[in-house]
Image (cartoon, rainbow over all chains, first blue to last red; front, side, top):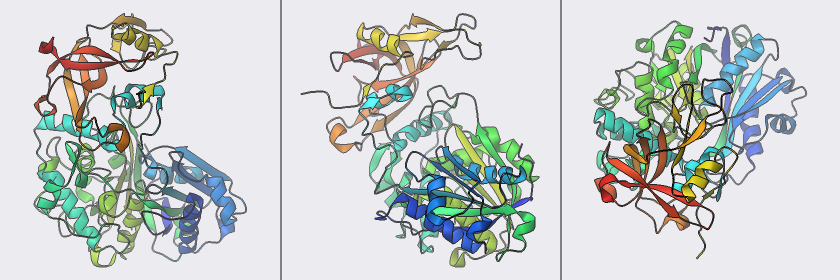
Length: 385
Length: 138
């Protein structure tokens, strides 16, 4: 269990514009986000001695970003090859690196030309190797196709209809309307949801997140140092990373996963809450990894916000709206703000806890949950101000 | 016309599976000490040290555990003529799960736990893909 409660903080944040075609190298996107995050923390380049990222072979190496920026001593420069499940893992890893004395101030980033460059699950590889040889030859290639298999199983087990998913899509879009950096800001109705194009049953277009070019970065430092930096520190209360049995070769490989109605959050919830010393009822606002509408249900159920199979009902009736008991994805989420592989959720969490989210600010937000990942492994953090 | 879709690249772990498919046999692995059947194949038995699983021919019968129906083709040019098509996770009688296309059934008529059986489709001179069809179709 993660054991550094309140000892580390997010002291700086930075991001690029979120677009469909950046026209720039991924490295330059990363450098921009990191440079802004370092400046936001009131630090100089020679204060930074760690840089961590994660990628799907679609990013820029941490060392390359350190080089472009001119960080003189990037002692702890590490790249994780991982999916969105790493969006909180890399920040937790930064705290561990600092605790171990490997670095003092660490910048964490995710950068991608996810729309104009490398599109996840593009399906162009005609030679299906490894576990992909048991999926791609059957035309089972994209992430919507992967997650639809989980969603179907949930429907089989619980008889869920799509009303909860419609509510999620509409609510997050409603938040994005108030967010100038969101890529999709046109309100949608329940009819718009049901009439959106069938992509892969049981998913419609509006169940599926955006594809984006952009980058996000945060600076992690000790709580002590953060107190002297320009912004109110956002403390890392708790965190967890993990999965269940049979996580498979990659995020697509869930052939041996025990039960597709439940994802990794079922397995890491206890560790997460114990690490922070709080429970689901203490959360003021949450940023849930919404690569698909359905993944929100599995996260809420797995982390104990509601019972298994009841997520669809739980999210209705205004509960997850800005004025509800559990406001979710206040920037619009991956569904409507942007898909920077979940890292944009961390930016929004920090802004909510700094109280600078403008018209979408949740009043008196003190504790924010962020989650990352939707399938066989995942990560989560609990942040407070 | 040559086959234009992704093809499996057999490796030391998977070769018996693909050779089996070519011979119209659905091959899976079984760990002798635990009696567990497994798919996809691995070199070592799960949870049994360095014990190596044996290859056995599966019954080819199973039930639909979950399925998807692809409506929007991706990549578009490769699958435009195929949609709608179904992909299933099938729980075999032996207890392990396997993937494959579900054919010989209207994609809107697929149901959970529907009994299915394996069939085989030669797609190139080297590669034969297993498919699943309703068990009563034979």
